[in-house]
Image 1: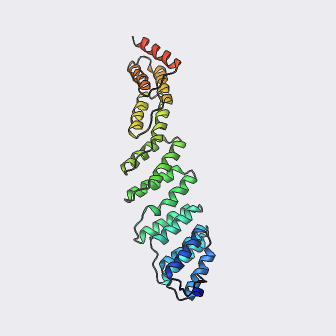
Image 2: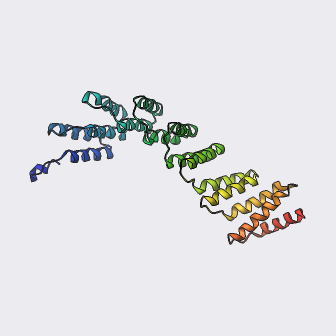
Image 3: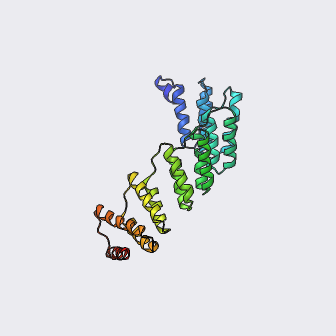
Amino acid sequence: LERMPDYGLNSTQMEWIRVLGVCASNREPDKAVEVLERMRAEGEELDLVAYNSVIGAFSKAGRMDEAIQWFDKLPSLGFEPDRIAWNTIINGLASVGRVYEASMWRGEMESSGIALGVDSYTGLVKQCLEDREVNAADAWLQHMESRGVTPSRAMYRDTIKAQMKKSHWDEAVSTMARMEASGYPVEPRFYAKLVVRNIVRGMVREAIAWMDQLEAAGGVIKPYMLELCIKACKRHGGPERSLIGQAEKLFRKMYELFYTPKAETVDLMKKLLEYQR
């Protein structure tokens, strides 16, 4: 930009804004301020986009106190902070671990009358998950839903993954239901985890129900799931003969999947059928 006049060209405001954007992306807030001052010296219009770029540069660099100082300057410069400015501060504070402050800023943003969007919660949810505060992350999702803001697919996915990792199974199932209600398909891998979890607990009927969900979601029932489920029927079948019937259906399912059962599974199935007789 500095060399453009040498070629008889004049820089435009949009070109300066692009440079500010590069400074923000590169986490170089001091250079962003230099560019801003150069724009002022050359008589370029300094609009809210320009100031938001400077705020963004400080935020991405993790220098949140300075980002807030620039945010606080906006009214004296003739601008009211817009959604971008608010979200930049909220997400920046969350990204450096200042989650409580970020939540306070989100509350102030709502009180200011500016409509909240997904971006107003992104940093909060992400940081809660990084801090392994799974319940807090889910609470933010529910808060969003109560405000009529639909969480992103990634928010739901990452929260479910974290809940399952912490064995918060009931909460994970609830989040899956809400994800589906929000119009997002639930990933088959989550259904697969529920299948295995219920097999391990000996809850054969529940495992089979989740297998149906797994198939409906476009997932593939793995042969090992069927074999584990048949074994669970043996362990927990006892006098409950209906489970033996379930085992027989699972056994047939293996052949539908073009899978040859292991010898031990065949022997187990024979014993179950003999028991039934």
